[in-house]
Length: 375
Image 1: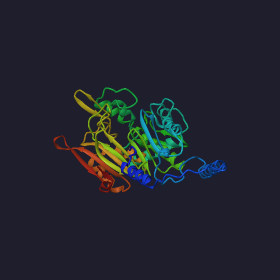
Image 2 (image 1 turned 90 degrees about the horizontal axis):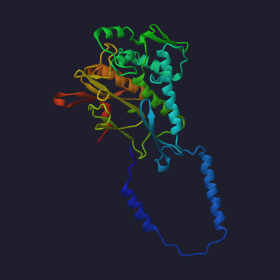
Image 3 (image 1 turned 120 degrees about the vertical axis):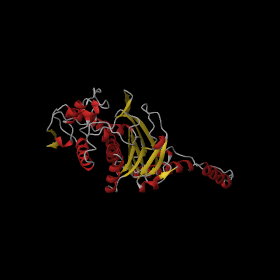
């Protein structure tokens, strides 16, 4: 996504300028030239400022200029974020404030967050961010027959992938935990969480990053910004075009076992705009115990880590929270159920990488996604 220099154009421009340049004959300067030029400069500055009081680019659809491109990065939600956008001033401090608000709402690792208070059964006033994610999770839970469930927290913790230490797992311990799993046990009434079981805990990790990306994107759009890309921990939202005036280029990683998160081999590059993308996979968040691999995707319907041939699921959707949640759900559901659900949701596209024969990958993707493929 770095800006590319077209050297051919530069040479052509330089040649044209050289050929058309004429050496002016010397002439005597007149005293009124200086105040006249100052008047023109001040008048031009006034007109530009009047038409662009916030300093933002006047024509957002024009090709980006170097002065309009801002690239920010930092850490949030235990991962990293990157933002590239077109605007007259740097907005990183404001972007960080938006993400911090999401963290204070949905992070179970934040001791002062709303979700932490909910999990500790403390009476707390819910905000719009929390309720948005809760009701979106309810909807996707229903559409995936329970494959996506934000009450999976006790299971995630028990298996060692959550915000508490791993437990000694036995069939009986899983059976005991499963009594406290199920989104039907939680609801919102009068802006308060209501539980039928106080042991129920919420974990929005499978949707919160995507929601955070959307929150930043919407904030940028409210500033009138039409060209941007926001990425948090691999979840991405794209609008308009990149600094080269082209659709945004994003890559889908090869699902190579990489618990250190250092592998960046690309399986497929896509050119996308005005959409969001999220990927879920078991190739980075896993551990080996007694010579057996345990992956972080837990099936809330069984209580156990999933064991099927999908290595990673990438989802393209109108918003990043939806893409994030369905990517996790597809990892739980498996290939056949994923394809069935996609046939009912034309607004979604998916790219699945599965284990094939002899260590090779098996690829499946939505037909309409192929138009976005690039080298």
